[in-house]
Image 1 (cartoon, rainbow, N blue to C red):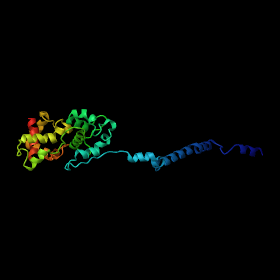
Image 2: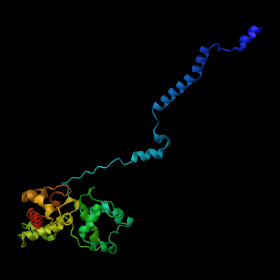
Image 3: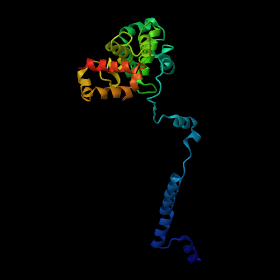
Image 4: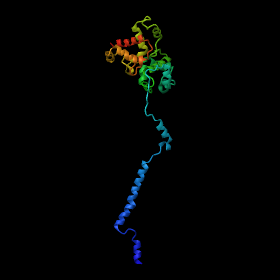
Length: 263
């Protein structure tokens, strides 16, 4: 009976080899099992974050990833009123963010005194809370038209860029302003002031500034015909003919007026 009693208290581990085996089975194997489960769970397909957080999912869907602006350089230029309603009215209709309210002569007065070119430059480059308007849906000439429309509603008398004046319209039917009694230089100056000055007077949007010999020099070196061709077909931010509706003769006179001022 004494032998049986001693055997019952010795347990299953009777030698060092059995002790080592039990240690491996009891500690090492479970660790590997746990690691395997972690790898399996982390490599599986994760549920959409929106399932548990709908607001996060919505934010991810509406997040801006980029913008693409596609403009047809040959499309008809939009008028100042149309540009104002589509682009400017968001702030200027109510005077939000410090914008001078449409038709408010008191608010627009000091701005109008700075001149049309300064107003256009502020619109294109941005000022205060207003972001730069150039390079968006509307080209620079159309933005200038919108500026003229707003300023004129507050008392200014700016010519809308690209819009032929009554004298030009009449001259077009009679073979040009020169044929109607004026000189070609007079006709060119009128077209320049009505259309080209919006950019060339201040040099905005990369346009060579009126009378700037350094800016015009490389262009004049190519010859007048090349300058006229570029002006007619458009280049960069400038639309074909600068958006002018003047006759071919008067438009050519405007290019000559610009060129002669830089010689």
